[in-house]
Amino acid sequence: NAGVTQTPKFQVLKTGQSMTLQCAQDMNHNSMYWYRQDPGMGLRLIYYSASEGTTDKGEVPNGYNVSRLNKREFSLRLESAAPSQTSVYFCASSPSTSYNEQFFGPGTRLTVL
Amino acid sequence: AQSVTQLGSHVSVSEGALVLLRCNYSSSVPPYLFWYVQYPNQGLQLLLKYTSAATLVKGINGFEAEFKKSETSFHLTKPSAHMSDAAEYFCAVDPRTGGFKTIFGAGTRLFVKA
Image 1: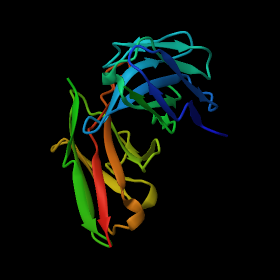
Image 2: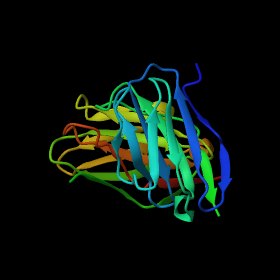
Image 3: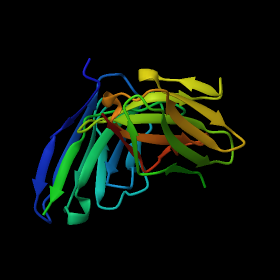
Image 4: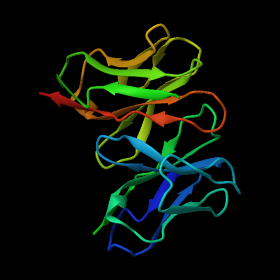
């Protein structure tokens, strides 16, 4: 039982490059989330998926797109990376969006030069 | 709008001393509240949660938190700090107003001195 897994763990991009961050969970959770973590700002929600087939914007969606590929997988895409997107990205899942704790992956550290 | 404030971005205590990490929230209805811990280079993991049952909530690793509605607070405490408690701690609030609206505080980094 791996919980929430994320790939890659580290990535360096040049401005304008694109990439996709992958996330998968094996807990049969309905809801999945993407956050970014920046020093002094806590976690900010980028996008979430309340259930398979739905996605919604969070607090900071600009510059990102997501795909809920199936119940297990939720990917985050940067179409044209910018230095402001340098951050640590966390994927999380929970049984539902209501009143549940979230289970977090180990994170992806992204640097955009 | 709901918000969560963690007082003090850094807290330093001596090993064996009391740990007190402060969290205040604003919400139109009594929310659900969470404390998460993040060890270096890891994701967050749940320490404890308040879901409108007992106001004093016990969590893992000897931590507990008390929900005080009159003070809109949910402070995290541990009677005796261990070196292994050094980590970043996040308070989070779910305002229970429909949809997904959980928000996280900015975090408090706990340092434990030998």
